[in-house]
Every structure is written in C-alpha cells, then in structure tokens.
Image 1: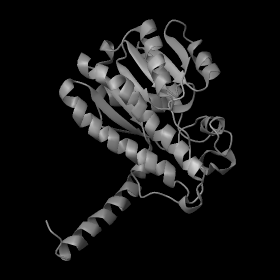
Image 2 (image 1 turned 90 degrees about the vertical axis):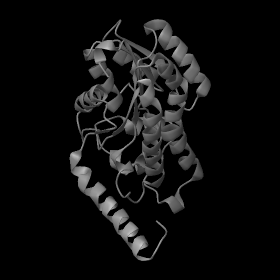
Image 3 (image 1 turned 45 degrees about the horizontal axis):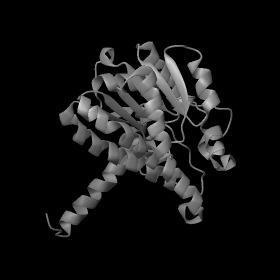
Image 4 (image 1 turned 180 degrees about the horizontal axis):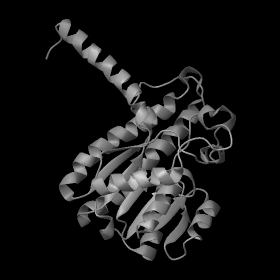
Length: 267
C-alpha cells in the first residue's frame, strides 16, 4: 500500500509496546491515528504527544457494541479508516493445558483471537467496498513454531490469527485490500500490566516478568510493520533467528507426510 494515500489508521492496543511503536511510525508517515486501548489514560497520554495527529478512545476488543461505537467516533474525527491494526492482546500464564483454568483459556481466546475477528468484522467490509487499504493482525512467532509448554492457549489463539489472516488475505486481495499477519518475538511492552488489568495472573506470565527492558525496541517493530504494509507482505517478522524453530516444525511435518506416503495413504 502507498502510505501517501492513507489518511487514517485505527490501532488497538496502541497505548504501549508494539502498538505504540506502530502508532508512532504511522504518525511519522503522515497518517492520522486513532489509538484504541482498554487503558484510556495510557492512550490519551500517547495522543497528547501529537495533538491533531493522534486521538484516543477506550475499547475492550471483546465488546462488539464498543467496536461499533469506536468506529463511528474515530471516523467522525479523521474520516474513513484506511489501515486497521488489530494488535491488542494479553499473554499466557505458564500453566500446562491440563491444569489451565477454563476461564483463563476463554479470556485468552476472547481477547487474542475473537478480538481480532471483531476488528475485521467492524472494518473489513468497508475497506472492501472502497477498494483500498490494509489490515494488520498481530499473532506471534509462537504461532509458527512447534509450540512450548505453558503456552498452549496463547499459541492456539495466535495460530488461529495466522490462519484467519491467510484466508482474509486471499478474500480481500481481489478488492485491492492488503492483509498482513505480524508474528513478533519478544518486544518491550506493558503486556504484564495489561494481562493483570484483564484478570490474568501476572506472576505466572513467565515470558514477561521483570521490568519490561527485555526485547526489541517497539519503534523498530513499528518500522517493520510499516515496511510490511508498504510491501504488502503476508507475514511481518521481527526476529529471524526463529527460523530454526520453524524449520524443526516443518521437518517433522515433512517426515509425517513421507511416512504416510510410505504406508500407502491415498494421494
């Protein structure tokens, strides 16, 4: 997508972390941005850094009526949305699937997967009618690897985001709308506080313990997202060293196909 033609972007989870990095990169490119975040104060703080270019509103991505209201409010201010970034999410809690509280599973799926669908459901049809624009859905590099203990629900949600994005890309391409799925590794964020705000057990979120100083600078992640939008990349990646983990998964799949063929499975 030519970013010069984009006037308005809508970014969920834009008050911190990857979302804020994307917001600032879009604003630097001359795009007005609506920051939609469950942390209204945080979103307003970011918006205040660039009055007239950024606007803030509160949104729980599980709330479909809230999505409709947010769309109306955002477009009244900045006009139709050209770029949708479904970035809001929470982390995993480190429990084995067998020990996972069903409420925790439901919360992760509702926010990390259904929240992305809600954004698509709210904006994608309009983008299709207008015949231009771009959608970015945030998944995780964990969706592309062979998985890891304690991350089952999170990986399930993020893997589904990848699959949904791949299908959506094929559906929207004939209408001039691009779709990318962002699969980041560790990026500095406030994911722990967001998870806690929504009822998660932060002390068990093993990958985000500490002071938030670990991981890629969100500004770099934001720059990679803009590059992915400009180039219409199907997958936007931040940590290429994970390729070895992806290769391990693919090797296991290839071996399984070879074994099935050797067993005389139908072609």
